[in-house]
Each structure stands twice: as structure tokens, then as C-alpha cells.
Image (cartoon, one colour):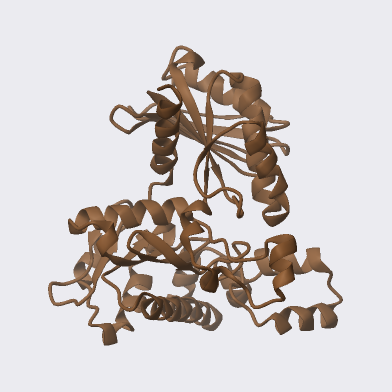
Length: 403
């Protein structure tokens, strides 16, 4: 079975074509700058590639280009779209409506549309991706949606409720939802597999660290808490996002700067975090380089980021009543030995000890156990694979549908 995995953004469309017989990637690529020009980058498992500037007015045109590069030219991997059995879509916000992956039908489409206010950029783009896919593939090819939030739906009310008047939860479903669920789900299951233990017997803290970052506390295979909240803005500081704030900071800046809701959202989502503190960049590689040269605000940004990660890990250890394993994943978690060393070095009270030499080489897809034999808690670097989670769910749902 061949499955096309889609991650549609507001101006992009990432894709992977997977052969589910051996879970291998046949080809992958991305259409970028949709609506503002356009280009496509496409590569195959056997080393062929294709890049070109192509104007995409919308996601449908991008899908047509994906169809073309998959089926024709020097980097083609299939003869016809009929070889694709199903399409799996990543959806950021499933709200309280979707607690598991679903086969797309009209009610699912309307459910995703109803949640646009909770993730305006993401869910609108995902919806465009679904509708564009239908237009290109037709309705005979099954589509499945996999939600970032669904893995977190096991949180108890004391973890997901905010201390605002209860009526706002009843009226607007304001609560903690959590994100990066497919990543947390994948690496926690992989961690249990590596440890050779049932996930139901483990307490795991997964650290998905990148430009957007979140932690999840997982007990008996279920999330009991996570750092992101109603939106991906909550938690600890990220590339351009503030993370958790005293709400008075919001109202105070609004009054002093005469800013409205949209301007505040832009400020806290796109101009804050590591970028806002350093004044240099949202990319940790740039910040680490500047910090090594003595840039004071870059040093401060790194210290703040790592301190906040440690603080959340500590709080999750308390919530879990202990921890068996800590997992680092995501672009930053997988590729920043400095961050891992700093975070783990300040958790010595838990008897956590990492191998300094292994820590230096675990990057660029190389992972494994980071902790020493003497460490009381296992520490791992596990490269994430959100696409395989989407593909597996899609395969399972389609096979069940055909029984």
C-alpha cells in the first residue's frame, strides 16, 4: 500500500510518499511560497531530485505540481495517481471534537472548519489541503486526518482546565489542548521499545524541541500533562514565541503601546522568544554561535530557554511522581549537544548522568541512549518521525474501512 502524507501550511505543502509494505519513503518534497510566487523541491529515495520555480496561486495548483513530479519526469516514482491507496493529513487542532484519527467525510470537514478560531493559520491551511486533495484525487481516494491534539486528549481536567470562569470553558471550550502530539506519541513508543518494556509500565517525559517546542508527561502510555495550552504559544520560550506569561504583561503592554488583539498576537507569536531576547535570530544555531563570541543577549536567551525547560521537566517529575526516561527530539533536541548537556547537568539531584562523548555525536539523525550506566534515569535522543505515525493511522483506518 502506498500512502501520501500531507502537511499543508498557510503558504506551503510538504509531502511524503510512503510504501507501507516496509514503511519506506519513496519520495518527499515541499511546495513553498503558495500564493506569493512558488517553488518545489522534490527528491527520491534512490537519489534523484528536482527543483524548480513554479507559480502556485493556491493549494490545488500545488497538488497538481506534486502529481506531475510524482508521475512524470526524471524524478518520477509512480506511473499514475491510482497507485496511491490513501492520503493522510496532519491537522494541528482537533479541539475537544476529535480524540482520534478520522476518515474524512463532510462532518469531519465541518468539524475542522469549526475549530479554525483556535488555530486560524494552521486549521485553515489544513482544510485547504484536504479540499485541494479532493479536487486532484477525487473522492474515491480515502483521506484520513491525524490530529496533533489527539494524543493529549487523555489529560485529566485538573491538568487541562484554566482557572478562568468556568462559563468560558462551556461557551468557547477554552482549555489546554497541547500540540506536537504525533511526535510525542512516536518517540514515547520508540523509547519503550528501546527499553524493552511495555509503555504502560513507564513514566516518560518527552521533549520536542525546535522553533516550536513542547514537553509531555506520559504515564502508562497516556499524556497526563503538556506544556502547550489553548494554542502553541504556551509553555517555555521558543524561537519567536513567548511561552508562559503573567497575563498582566499582556494587558500592560497593550495599554502602554496601544496595541490591539491581532497586534499582540503577532508580537507574542512572531517577535518574542529567543528572537525577542537576543535581537539577532530565532535560530538557535545563530544564537549559540553569537553566545560563543560573548554576545550578552544571546547568552541570556540560551540561559532563559534552558532554565525554563529544566523547570518544566522538574514540574513534570512531580506530576508523574518520578520518571523512568527523558527523551530529546525535534530539530533542536536532536541536534544541540550544548542544550542537552545544560539541561541534564542541572538535573543531578535526580541522579541523571549523561555520556559527554556520546552527547557530542548524537545529531543529524543519529540517536540512542545518552545516559551512563550509573544514571538513575534513562536519557535518550530519538529522532522523531511524525509522518510514519500519520501513515500508520491512515493505513489502519483504510484497512478497517475495506473489511
